[in-house]
Length: 311
Image (cartoon, rainbow, N blue to C red; front, side, top):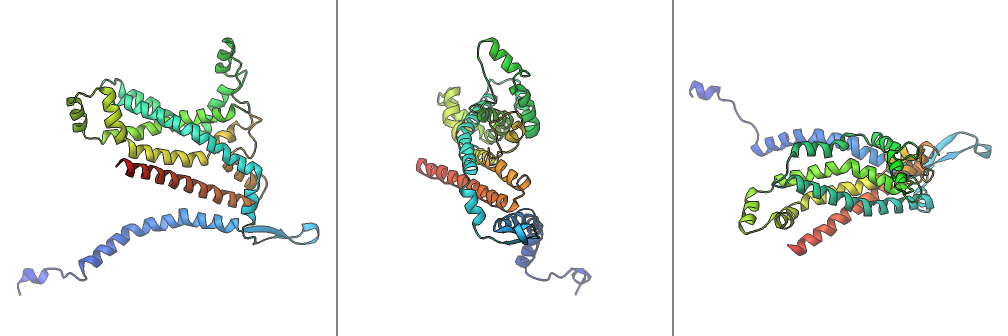
C-alpha cells in the first residue's frame, strides 16, 4: 500500500445518511423556532379558550382558580351581537377596500413599468414610503386630518359648501379604509412590480411585433403575468383586514361611533385587558384565526378553480 493511499481518509456511512443528517441540521433549528414561536402560542390560546375562572367562597369572594369549561367561551362569543357585528363590519370593509387598493396598486405598477415612464425610482419610493410609517403613527396623522377645527381637509370642504364629517357613524369605517389604503398600496405595488420584472422581455417584443399597442400589451401580456402576485397580495389583504385593530383603536377617542367591539380584534382586546376575561378573549382570537384561514383558503380555492377553467 502506498503512502498516499495510507493517508487517504476513510469514508464511513452511506452518502444518503450523511445527506439526511445535514438536511436535518438545517431544518431542525427552523422547526424549533416554529414550534416555540407559532405552535406553542396557538396551543396555549386553544387551551386557555377551553377554560374559565371559578371563584370559591361566599358570594364568589374567595380564591380564583381555572376549571375546564369546554366550548362555553365559544358559545358566548358566537351569541354576542357586538362581536358578530364587528365581523360583519370588517367583511364589508374588505369587500370594498381590498379591490380598490388592489386596482390602484395594479394601475400604479403598470404605469411605472411602462416604456414611457419617467422618474420611476422617485415615484416608487414616494408611493412605498407610507408603508414605512407604523400603523399607529399613520392613524394619528390622519386623525388630525379628520378632526373638525383642525383638519385643513374639512375647512376646504366647508369652503366649497360641502359639510363633511369624516368621523361620523356612516363615514368612519371608510376613513379607516383610507388610512389602510394609503399605507399598503405602495407595498402591494412593489410586489406587483417585482412580478413584472420576472416577465421575459421577449414576450413584450413579440407582442409589439404582432402590432400590439401599450394598452394591448398591458391587458393581454402584463395582467395575466401578474396573477400569482395578485393572488398573494389579496390573501395578505384578507388576513390583514380580519386583524384590523390599530386604526380604530387610535381613532376611538376621536369618534364616538367606534366602540370596544368595532372590530373582532378590538373586541378580543377589550375582553382580555378591560374586562379581565382572558379565556373568552382567547376563544374569540381562535375564532378570528379560523375565519382568516377559511377566508384565505376559500379565496385560493376559488381562484385556483378559475385558473384551471381558463387553462
